[in-house]
Image 1: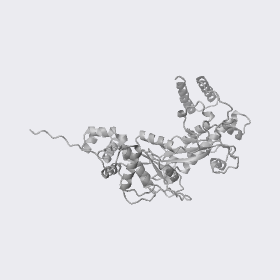
Image 2: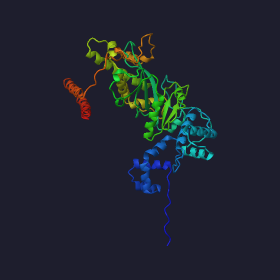
Image 3: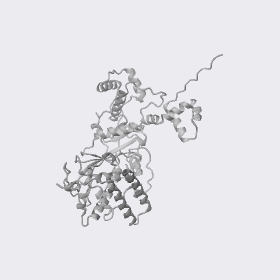
Image 4: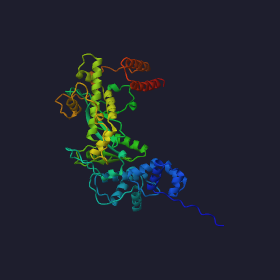
Length: 471
């Protein structure tokens, strides 16, 4: 009697595995039903589900061969990833990349990493197959998808590398660095201090990276006793953006999520970062040198500044109400760098995702049609009382003005009294102080006809403070 032969394994390609995941997500089909449809075993479908995040990351990266059935890892994975990173930078710069160039670069990277490795033609063929790399004619930077016709008066369009089309909108990020006069007052620059702000968000507006503020003070007095990891934004003691540190953290975060993302940057910044090693999950994509479109839409940047200025005026008004007879210029001295950090984080949180999404599309930085705006008024803060629309608009764009000589006071390493609004260190608040402040705040709410919705928010804050006090 002849024994039954073993069933032959039917391996699915990457594209078929993604289709399996779609069927399981979109329909009510069981794993067994999907297995029968694809003529594979149910345990194979189960393994696909377990590896869902990794498979989706490969699919969205644009570098994986979508027809491959098995992913065989290279023995020299570090060299493999480093060469792929260099290849994407070279293609973004429109270089003609050839096989000999890749072999030479692979050997160079192996020497830098201290590995005894001599790349061969066979290794290069397998590397190209693993990473879905193909050679062809040199590509000129051009939009990867046609943006919507711009409104009248808008003529500039971003010139994007062809590789941008390999990413989903959720994985395309843009970032911008901008100067900010963090305690300016309307009508006058005053003795205002400047910080450098870095904003970053994806084109859908669903992810906003932590705000980074750079200032001249090495150790602002107001940061005494503060745990930096608990703050909603980061501070860097230099007006220059620490690109290498920031990108390294961004790359680690994306690696933990199993993602490959694109980061739009100005061409000059990418040129400065060309030799930056170790970026495996973030691909830097420069805008064309001739493009005037910023890598983060200007309307998004302006919305952030408008929310910042609106919140700043609220804090200045609060200082004035606390100190009778205080002018705006005098109240400005009470705004610390720590205040600016919190206000910046709050302002960035208030920029609506809908505005970010539509702005990316309108400026040609993301594919698709501009979604209908629900309410234009909700995208910008209301004009503060006491200012006209024109005056507030001028206040938002204050950084565009050229300050007169001696007008803008730079921060120094040793703060004076005006520099932080504090003559000496204040004692750190105790648990008793925190609980007492909660009681005072609740009493003030009770006496001022506060809405029930605000009480709900207060209860959440009260619960969290009480929890921390019990630790």
